[in-house]
Length: 286
Image (cartoon, rainbow, N blue to C red; front, side):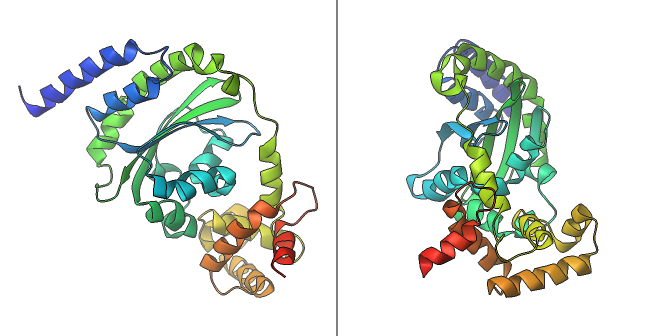
């Protein structure tokens, strides 16, 4: 038996085990075991995305304790608002399989968010299965590569994409059999996302113009000046002018400093319409 036949045989056996655990709370572990028969994956996150709610972590695998503060805690506290995948889901990303490169903005791999939430936790590649068990609710199964592992090859991505029908079908059964029955997922949370998003939208409200805040949002999310200009319907030179002006107002000299200031200020948002988390943060520092 050649290696490819052996892998397919192991995949088939793993599917048999998986299908016997569709009503098991530990189902994600068996799904990952099946995927691993054809494509080795690590850094697994199963997240529930609900309209107008903060994403909820349902399951994780191979996230070292020393990396959880950045990879888990900071992300679900508000940094998810800069994540291209989370943004794509909020904008109606259809069920299916996606590689990070398919949904990230043009300058994302040079962004400070990428540095902090990918490179600093040694996450070298990322891909996602998106499942929509019902309107307004989506499950995302994120699978990554860490440390010295190579990024997914084109062949591996093709294999992962070919697994999508199995992942979709089995995850739908897991939703009906387990997640929909669990009190923590059967009822939505209490609208905390709107408070976090208010803090994001109001960052710099006390000192920046509306256009400057729009530029800030796009830069933090990994857009280049050219891409931001296209989004806003203005010229790249105008974006650069706004960028220079907002750096001056915030006493910053780089995008890295802007990112650090944003992450530090975000928890100080009150959720009120006219409340600037930056203003509250700066008052606390005095």
